[in-house]
Length: 41
Image (cartoon, rainbow, N blue to C red; front, side):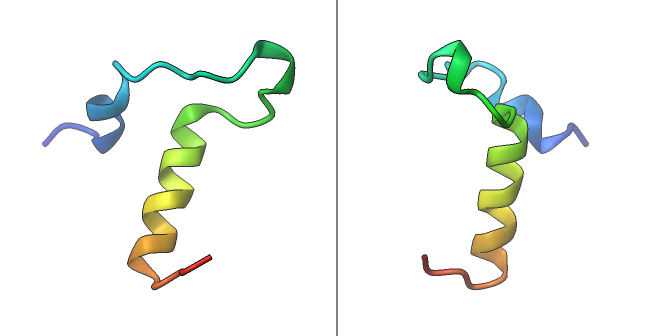
């Protein structure tokens, strides 16, 4: 089984370099974890 992050590697990160505090992989992981846990905001 491939890592779920591999499915998102072709996405572009639209933010400018100076405002990138977190990697795209971190943001995707946090988003998926929040959805699984029932986060709504």
